[in-house]
Structures are given as C-alpha cells and as structure tokens.
Length: 212
Picture 1 (cartoon, rainbow, N blue to C red):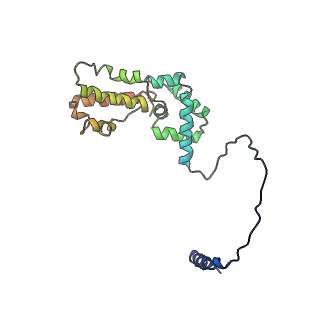
Picture 2: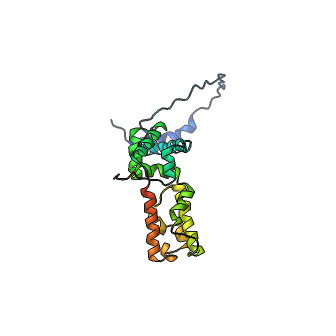
Picture 3: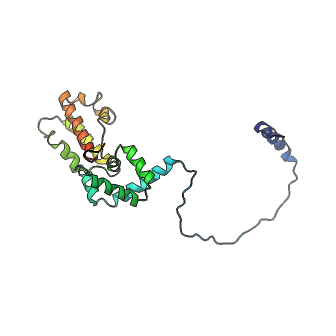
C-alpha cells in the first residue's frame, strides 16, 4: 500500500491528540565528559553547491589575492589605465589561478566581464590619478561650472572604485540625483559625447589591442 502526504498528515493529527495519554516517567540525566579534538582545516568541494555560490567565492578570493599583489606590473598597467597587452592578460590568468581559481572560474570571469581585463579591473579599481588624468585634457577647470565639475568628480569616484563604467550609468543614480535628466542637464550634447568617448576609452584600455 502506497503512503502519500495527505495520509501522513492525517496520521500526524491523530497521533497529536493521543500524546497527552502517554504516561510521564522520570529519567536520570546523562552526563558526558570528553574533549573535542579539532584537526587541521581541510577545504572540501561539495558537489551539491550551486555554481553561483562557487563563483562568488572565487571572486572574493581573487579580489583578496589581487589586492595583496598590486605591485604586479600587469595590475599596475590595468590600474593606471595603460593599454593592456596580450602578455598582461596571460599574467592576469596566472594570478587568478594562483588565487585558487580553476579554468572554469577564469572562463566564467571572462564571460561576466566581457574580458578578463575588465573583470580584474572591476576587482581592483582604477588609480584615482589615472581617472582624473583621463578627463584632464577635457576638464581644464576654467570653462566649467561648479555643477559640471562636481558631476565629473562623481565619474572619477566611480572609476576609482569600480575600474570601469558604462555610459548608461550617467543616467542612473547618483548622477541623476544631481542632474535629473542625466549629463545633458548640465552639459551640451557635444560635451556629453566627449564624456561618453572618454568612458569608452578608459574601458578599452582593459582589453588587449585587437582582442574581440
């Protein structure tokens, strides 16, 4: 005879009404006296863990490792907004592997960022001086208003923290908190195009020349 969930629920309800008739007895307490022995920790890969959880763990370990090795030449080029080379990309792969990343993790990182250089730049950010320098020739500090300078400084802040920035972010918070309609609230169309070009140029430096 098969047992299904409704049948089990009915049995549970009936047993619950009979519990009060069970005779109560007193039992002596049982004491234990032993000392736990904690051995050396061992990393165990659980096959039931979802890939997303594993990748988030990889991202955290990779970021910690990379920030401990910021003096690495490839990372310095990436953070200083210098054009990444194919050899730099190989070095970044080696660093991710050294952080504990497996080939599947590195493939995921490349797919998530659209480029491994973009992924790594997002982890380590952009040097603030490099972010400022990207706008130096455009924002000379004399022909722009305080609101315009403040808007560009928001961009510099984001590039410093996140390494890259898509132009669409210009129409989201915190930019729209200051310019409700986006950059065109403060800038003429020609200047908006220049800002967008600068952002794309910064992003492109995290991708080796000629890479897809």
